[in-house]
Length: 464
Image (tube, rainbow, N blue to C red; front, side, top):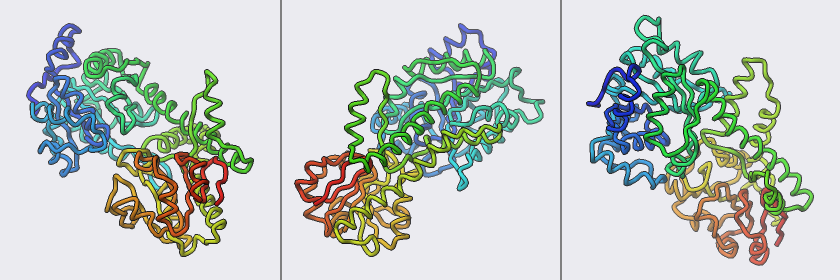
């Protein structure tokens, strides 16, 4: 239980707030201690605040309370985690009443994925909103770090928390703010230090409190915005910008393949211009952020009669890329006088991004499905998923196991282990030396010298 609850954080004078922040005499609850929530909780705990993590995952809660660090692919937080747990500044619980009732600040770090129809799924945050209505003490502060559409907090979440407004009312005895997380998995500690935090609140009093607290915990700049919906819009705009620009480069990559132009050479040249920002082509855009963020904006546009044609087109291009990778494979196999049907194809990497264990919305899933539909045999190897089940298949325990006897290999994720694979090893171990490099990590000259049939997204064709 948090022992430092002050029960009146919204009513503090500025000097009293500063003193409580400085001395750590504020109790914090982080709801959802996963990929972003746990590093957030660790950061608050190591800044001196008594911090409790609430999660419905009992195994995760047990790991945290047993001082067993769960995020093995975020090693920078390892020592900080152990320090926070051992100093009793951080613990976790599955008891929502214990966590919420005994905290001054409640931070929501809950998933907001998409459903099968690409509609944002806010069920987790809606469920917690209903609990907050019952469990929040008056004069508590709720900060939403989950990524939601502009207006969701004002139009949907706050009415859930307020209920009939008799006990809790924003502007009277309830503070609500948005500070959407902007950290990149695999480098969260770095991002917590350098990526500005976007903060918007329901009123100026709440905004000042959040600014004071976050300035104490994080080294990054605090950017104050007019309201919650502007903070959420800023987060989405930054990510959808990337999704759209990756789509632009993917579309050029397909064209340049036909023209015999290497897109990596083009991008390197363009990067010399002061106002060009490089984005790279690939097998598709995955993860819990970019695809979801684009659909969040599209969902907002749909309800407001806005078509957002460019964002929709970008999603269509990026979602086509797994199929294009299969087209490249078919072309390479044809050169080797092989058919996809009855061939054995090794998938290298199922994480949506390099060097993290996270396969959410990974293009690998669509590639595997299409290969199976084409009657290919599929082997999967990812250094973060050794010997586990993925897409109803048992993954291999090593790169050698995956490529040995295979008729083709598709490099989906540019994990560190895959960036230095000698083409000669592929030629030696594979039954048919065919590879599709969707991330531009294989040296084309080495591939040609080794006798590897190579195709790449936006790359020149390398024949045996």
